[in-house]
Image (cartoon, rainbow, N blue to C red; front, side, top):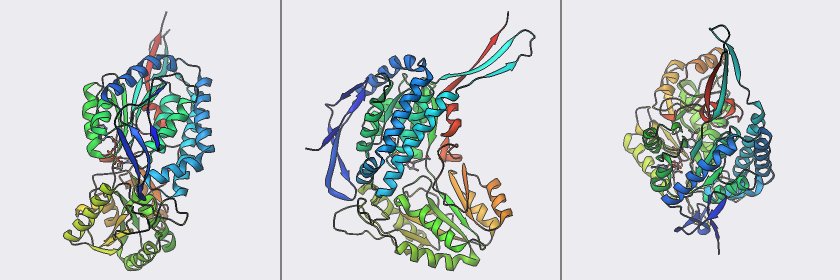
Amino acid sequence: MTETYKNLIDGNWTGGGELVANINPSDHADVIGHYSAASVADVEQAIAAANRAGAEWGATGLEQRKAALDFIGDELIARCEEIGRVIAREEGKTIPEGKGEAFRSGQFFQYYAAECLRQIGEQAASVRPGVDVEVTREPAGVVGVITPWNFPVAVAAWKIAPALAFGNSVVLKPSETTPASAAILADIIHRSGIPAGVFNMVIGEGHDVGSALAGSPGIDAVTFTGSVAVGRKIAQSAITNMARIQLEMGSKNALVVLNDADMDLAVQCAIGGAFFGTGQKCTASSRLVVEEGIHDEFLERMIAAADALVVGHALDEKTQIGPVVTERQLQQIEGYLQLGKDEGAEIATGGDILELATKGNFMRPAIFTGSNNKMRINREEIFGPVTSVIKVADYDEALAVSNDTDFGLTSGIMTNSLSRARHFKRHSQSGCVMVNLPTAGTDYHVPFGGRKASSYGPREQGTYAKDFYTIVKTSYVGG
Ligand code: NAD
């Protein structure tokens, strides 16, 4: 018998829905467990519970909120090894990547535990004599949290932690692809001492459970991370109820490599940014924009480094690149490899499907060469272990190509020129800009988010999160 992951509604674990298998992407014969699919009625009950419990939580003393968040953060960190293995088994990250995600998730809760005690308002002088003006913040209300599979615990953590810290109640709809790690997170939150109904979780597919949550008039705010297509639908339904919306979506991040870059560092950052996490990161370097003076050497070194990466079962200690998350996703990536060839690009290395000891979704990291920025492979999110090298004549063209995209989450530049680095930092049209660092990898105490189709609404993380999770009130006192 495998474990069944249930829904958490008003403090009770409820099952009874259709049981859906959770399959290990490294080994299709390994059924990790089953989730009990929530119904639309379950979603409505969870929202009703969050509405009932929200007022009490919003009025709770700050130390009680802090204690709950500390409890969650400390347990995530103490159990990061175990939770990391669960993430590796169901999502396909390597063990160090899974452990790192669980650890970082704990840090989000610890950070917002401290923020509980920093909720201090402002006072202003009035333009009218004898009047006092005060600016305070109140909880946004019931927050619907809809998350993707690629960081199943971390994305949920960076949304739930500020939501609870600022006095909101939550209904989480995790990705149906990663229910095991969501169930662990929900269990820890459930045991943290928060009142029943403040945190609820409903597991199921997006088209029914997700859309019932996003479109409910009982929700005050919806925070979503996932694809642009789904983000658009969620925004449209949430706006009919005038709910607040925060969307973090796709990307096509460019790493610019200039002639004067430190070549070892450039290759190291490009390999890590493009392929770690099996390239399934919203911050992945999917376009490597390379100045022509070093193009050939860079490409040669990239091919050698990519070929040396060990692709394998995520739970094997030697593995550097785990499987693609699902067979469907693997087929989609294969489709893009074919499309790239049809568009006239060449695959310099990789892209082959690997048959290993267990049947899984294994693909050797692929590098496109001879591509240009007009091709669909360089405009659409592939979301897998695939990157393109795009040759440019000079820095100006590199910057133009980097910005010539519908997205704008992260970007990076590898250079030893301070003036180029400063110019890029100012003119790159992305939410996060990296200099001599991979495009992936951000801190947890500063804002995270993008521009254009990558993000919509206020920033996540750091103190900026309060702009989404709180409502500002301006009070005037006269007399
Ligand atoms: P997805 O959009 O398919 O699904 C995300 C979530 O939305 C899942 O929980 C899914 O069940 C739900 N959903 C699907 N249809 C829905 C609907 N009609 N209504 C409501 N909810 C619905 O994304 P995914 O495949 O899980 O994740 C990969 C995507 O996430 C990539 O595009 C990636 O770039 C993006 N992502 C972005 C960031 C960021 O911060 N910008 C971070 C991680 C992942």
